[in-house]
Amino acid sequence: MQQSAVPELAHTHTRPIHWLATATALAGVVALSSVLQPGSATAAQPGTEAKAAHAPAAAAPDPKGVDFPVECGPVKALVREKASGDLDGDGRPETVAVVRCDAGSGTPPDGVYVLTQAAGAAHPRVVATLVDPRDRTSVTDFALRDGAVTATLLGYSSQDVPSCCPDVTDHAKWQWRDGAFVRSTPSEARSV
Image (cartoon, rainbow, N blue to C red):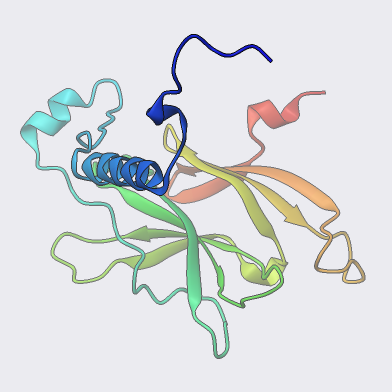
């Protein structure tokens, strides 16, 4: 075996102090990154700059504490997803919430509710039910874009189909028209 002309370097062997120094440095970077966060992102619809300059922005209704029309027995209703936007064109945002019973196991059905809050009102209220939990439907791909609510609904062809295995997929879109939410099929779901 040939001997190296360079003497062994002390720093080529890891010792507990090296691991401690590495862990301390990593903890410092994580702590620093949690303190130095970027500002919150903002998004605006094209052409809303003039509206925003003339009127104060209304806060979107918060679904926390809302009494949703869903029967959960001894467990509470759980808001799985939510999105806010002006659905009816009145300049005030509404919130759409996907809600199910917090059963802890299984896949309880979802309900989709539209919330609004009048100026000066203490709490928001449910003004529309887009998906009723009694329909045994699960909601996926939920979104609110351009004043429309879209979702994929997973359901069952009969009462004999087990709850674990929905066998019907439906794509739905709701828009406010003539004083009501009208359901249709999104254009991207109509492809052949």
